[in-house]
Image (tube, rainbow, N blue to C red; front, side):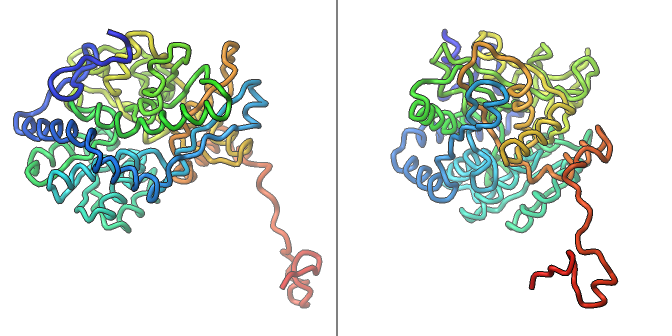
Length: 433
């Protein structure tokens, strides 16, 4: 078996080596079977693919650009291309999967969709697709993530979606997924669960991968056109791992292309406050219906993950990533909160692009870790950082004090009460009317 060839059971891929599977209540097995059969048919159906392709082109705005980041490239001494998923409608790669799964729900005759969200990008994408396709939508979100991502909460509500706060546990993504599963158990007859990442019970990891592989398919063609050859390395951030598996998949059968996943190192793996389950070498357990490396105690109880980025704050990872690590096809490294925050600022100032905090983990590694064997690489810029502004700037001030953005803060011009009273106006009398 090659690393690019998942272990296949009846229907779509249910396991990747020892990982994956379906560890769910019996009430969900018929729904998973139905979903598996439906996707096996639709992914080969020309009419469905044409409908999906039209929406991705005309509604989402694909293909997303592959951009040569010149100032980053000058700094690191190699060509660094950014796959601009941040320019998609709704601002992240999540819309690729949300549009596809909402179309699947329509084909299954289910009028209601539910989803979980951490950073809010999957929630916004699902709310957007539901509005487009006239589906009832409920999004589960931890209250800590709602605090960090309030603009996305407001966007979802504006789109007509119910945002259901989750108060249990750490009040982040893991608890949101758990609550969404509880909803699905009770409503499976008329509801489809739009899983946002390449994790969970089969067939979700393979469906999300299939719907996100457009990132890699486009990037592969674009780099051949731009550079005349394949890259030496492809880099992406990994929480559950949807953007990473989306871009990795197109290069799995190219052994000369290194694949690097960057996980949330949080406060450091040695502290336990992180989400780097692959780089941390954690043992496999069961979470949200799948066998995969997971943060757990000696009794198998799930531990809380930590990341400055809500989208990476998850104590497990998609099962195919675990298999790619074990087979040596991909490598996974951690990057901590502080380094991601500083990369968020650095890339904003170098390229005029505000990256998502999730993507900033990958960008830190590219900016600061020497790679003498790499001449050309692609980084998946999974989303834009507008949603992170308040949280990230507060984090930078906590790290560096008020000097964190000092040289961008200027004294107000034209504050001259006497001149204003005399009618001379601000800025040395040079008022522009």
